Image 1 (cartoon, rainbow, N blue to C red):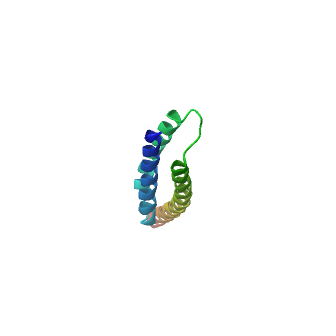
Image 2: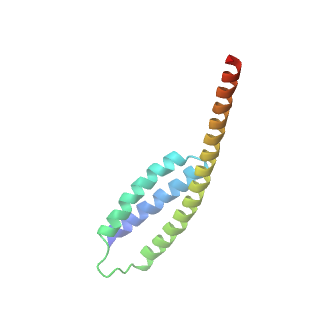
Image 3: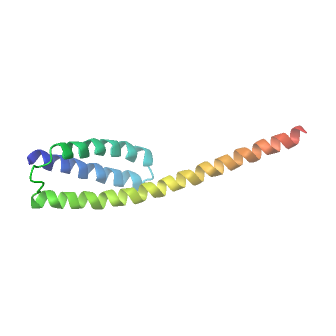
Length: 106
């Protein structure tokens, strides 16, 4: 039971770090933390209480983690969208430059 509580605290701390990083637009660092979170989630699943019941404190932590995860997901989607737009703009500029170079060589 104590181990589960510690894992939940670590998970919440990681999600808070992700939230901060994402607020600065640092999606890459946030994704690295999300990989750590996946390992924590697998450990939580492995050491799940046989009854499946959590105490009040653990339930509160799980609730906080779900809220934080939802917020991080939204921010990460927004950053991914911005990265896609930026990549698209670079591709268009490169194609335009290639076209102009071809026209000038004729």
